[in-house]
Amino acid sequence: MATPQIGIIGAGIAGCAAAFALRDTAARVTLIDKARGVSGRATTRRRDKIRYDHGANFFKLKKERHRTLVHDLLPSEGLVRVQRPLCTFTAAGECTPIPETEENQAWTYRGGIHTLGKHLATASGATVHLRTRIAKIHQAEGAWAVEATDGRSFGPFDQLLLTPPAPQTADLLAGSDLPPALAGPLIEALRASSYESLHTLILGYHERWARTHPFYGFANADGAYPIGWLSFEEDKPGHVPADQRVLICQMQAGWSEERFDMPPEELAPVAATHAADLLKAPAAAHPDWVDHQRWRYAQPTAAAATDVLSQAAPQGLFFAGDFMVGQARVPHALQSGLDVAAAMVQHGALVDQP
Ligand SMILES: Cc1cc2nc3c(=O)[nH]c(=O)nc-3n(C[C@H](O)[C@H](O)[C@H](O)COP(=O)(O)OP(=O)(O)OC[C@H]3O[C@@H](n4cnc5c(N)ncnc54)[C@H](O)[C@@H]3O)c2cc1C
Image (cartoon, rainbow, N blue to C red; front, side, top):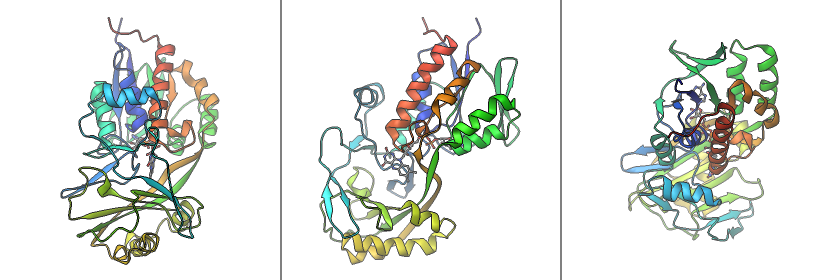
């Protein structure tokens, strides 16, 4: 019997988790991503000796299955807990600590949160193609093939898994030559999801000014402040040298969307001033360097119509990602990837390797 072939578009946490969960099947898995690295929005940048997680800040491990996966099945060297507690804050400046239960523990890696995607992809044994943006998918004679913007094509695949954010997956289907009876309902189901757009400003300081609060992260509780999330990257072991400081400043969705095309040079001073006010630390208003990320599809706020999407499974077409849940969380993407792999095994009769 020929080796079953599986193609996965998108090597974020959902795509990497699906590849990982398929590692013990007889299938050969190909992971394709447009970015330079795996892990998608759970991503990390480097600047000299500094590392910062500028997308997902940390992940929680509330489910036993996720704890086992991260602590036991993947390499756990470099897995670290965030060192200080989190709080919620209001525009009036009231901070309320979030209880530090085991479930609420915030995790990342010394090397950055993208280590999670890297570990999943490596352990999966999948063939990984990076810097490869898929423009079209095709279905012919019961198999799938995909075509990249640079003209390369991949396949045939017995099963194809699509994990880009729902609007991008809908655009991919709309731009492909698929039968309207197949593509139409899927596109509509994907467009049922909605996303917030966000600006992340990264503020760097060459010295550590005095902190007035005991918290690592500040989550906006009432939506009435331009900053939605603020955190101290130095509270993650291994991320920031002892004499430096990095603040991660995620602006509120409404604030970000009104200023979506504004250049970072204009956004950064405003973000730094709001950070200084929130932290009651005037020095925070004067970063020594700044970095920026504009997220068009940052965080889903409503799920896609998953019952419709699952109807494509008998045709060998599958979907996974946080948009299947409608909430932006690394564990949701992880679980979605694990769940879709189980569905792929069920539909493809991918027997475990002897
Ligand atoms: C600013 C921000 C802060 C967040 N904070 C947290 C947090 O603190 N804790 C938490 O748990 N979660 C957080 N999240 C949410 C978390 O990052 C996501 O829920 C999770 O990473 C989504 O994973 P995914 O695999 O579903 O999607 P993605 O990570 O988006 O993966 C999809 C992949 O598809 C690729 N792709 C897209 N189009 C194509 C194409 N045409 N061809 C090839 N590849 C393509 C992309 O490059 C990407 O790698 C945050 C997200 C953002 C943006």
